[in-house]
Length: 434
Ligand code: UGA
Image (cartoon, rainbow, N blue to C red; front, side):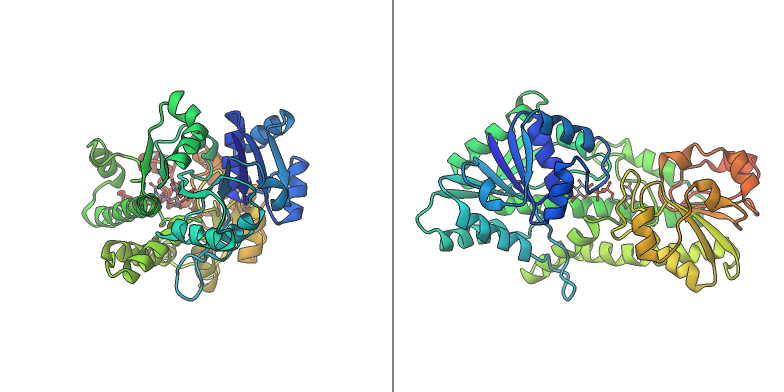
């Protein structure tokens, strides 16, 4: 199949590279000519484990190419994926569809024959239909179909997620388009036996939002259980394990922490909430989840302050700034709330992150340490904000020697309370006896 992928952001780049790895011929398009020039030179605009080598191998094999010229990529494509951004609109929280709809119009003008246009971007229910109307109004004579095919990749493990997804969802109202999508996902279906689910377009669009909102709800639920554990002397890890062994519940996404962040959950829960309110079926659960998660980040900052016995005039080491490990993404990271709060309370911050340093420096206006050791040096205690592997196995003797006071506030539960007590630390974690 010949595929054009419009948008070389996170989803577009990983998906485009992934399709080329399965043998399809893919051209990735972005209006940002600098980005395209970088990609042609083999430089990745994002950090994602494994992406570099897939892009290099498939570019070399001639199956993957990059261009800033949409008009050159569209003619002759069997399918054109729209994978441009849908940020939250500042004023009302709705997904901003400007780029998606502009792209649809641009595609319409460049089409030369029957093509399937696929919305990969996370778009509100009804958007695929809207895209169809736009293309139809520009090209009334043309045969085409618009399909919804949401993405379920996680940052940091996107390559594995692409190769072995739990499911592929296709929202499609035409048999001709269904055949094209079947062919595109044939390797997934036949080789890895991934279930490919065909639904209507509206259902498919909703599956994406419902999935993210449900996962956000799971996290928020276990965060509340952690708060209860702290009051009653329970251990939230054991609660999660005990609950998770029930197959109807599942253990995944029951890790208590400082609240979810990233480019998806905060934006998608808000967008689903707005849609639900607009259509007259307001989701009170999603509304509550959004509010609790926002409140949690500031509550965690206050908690750190309390665990430190006040931070005024103290040096606080912070390990991990990104919203999760294995990414350089800082979007809606809890650190963006927690670090400024601690500073406002008079703390001096010594922060380190294995990948997010550059962006953190810009967003927090903070000099970022080059190593974890540097961040820990002579600090009055350390806060773990992201569960990077290199912190998990950090030598506790060295940690103790570097810190001025052996105090650890672990918002990701990466150490065991027993081990920390034995090593002589004052140790505070989430939802576990300290
Ligand atoms: C999420 C979904 O997991 C993907 O399926 C989806 O495709 C993607 O959004 C998207 O819509 O594009 P992602 O944002 O990359 O993926 O990251 P997650 O691994 O889901 O983590 C999101 C946030 O939840 C992080 O801040 C993480 O620390 C937090 N989290 C996750 C917890 O606090 N506890 C958990 O148990 C799991």
